[in-house]
Length: 221
Image: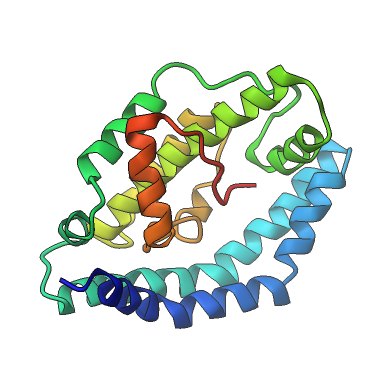
């Protein structure tokens, strides 16, 4: 099998909806809202900014995210594979090891994060961590990122296997809340999904993480 050609087909299938999602996110100010969340000292104001961002996720970004997922799933079937799991295994991703790494990473309680009450406080936490020499704070954030990575890849694998079915919505929120120790909005379940597993490079890195316990920071903020 020409692995590179297969990867290109999957990426081509996702390209249109992914580009539309990125364009719409920019047009509706999602990056600016995230930056504002990182700078805003007021808890109430952060909650209001987060609500605005989440509304864009639901009203604008969810549709192209669902389209991207379904296009990738159709491409997998068109390539003659019974499931995305089977295809990714053939492409060299040890899915079972990946799931084992994720399960192991999610064992135990999440790290203590200081004055963080909700998922929308994470941009502010990350901004503070970027400028600190506090090793304990940086280590806590690294452990959080590893747990979020583990929860995310389990969610992505289920989305690929089952498609955008409603039970995965609440499972996503529970899984992310367990990983972070924070209330997590279920509404982001499709937009936070990545049907390409972050491209072949990401899948390869995660496969390595399954055996070397690398700490990965993903797309969460």
